[in-house]
Length: 136
Image 1 (tube, helix red, strand yellow):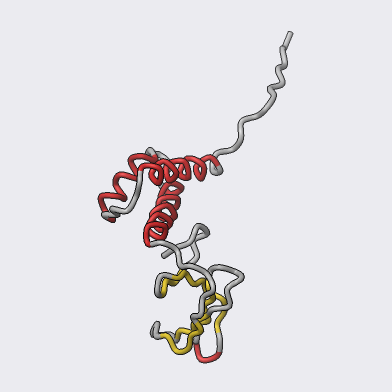
Image 2 (cartoon, rainbow, N blue to C red; image 1 turned 30 degrees about the vertical axis):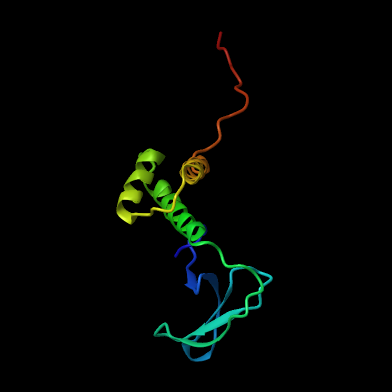
């Protein structure tokens, strides 16, 4: 899964882990995405878990929430790459491709708003005032 900032997120037992650092012998250390959680896992270069501490003190996110975040983040990247397509068209094409059946109407509304917001960051702001000059 990719995050909002296009970073890789590793999902294990329903919990999200983010990359922390590289250790010796090409071992990766991943920590829980919740910053106050002390859980981690170590993964070798063949994506096998070597060591882990998974005593989470918080609830894991719903599958529905993870699906919505995954869809929203991928659509935000596509909205920036393909600036000419409508947000609703991007959403419908992605829903047909992914077959996500856990979305509600409010989820789709929020995703469309996210797409419009991310596109608004691309365009420059319009000037607040216009200075007119008249030549004689």
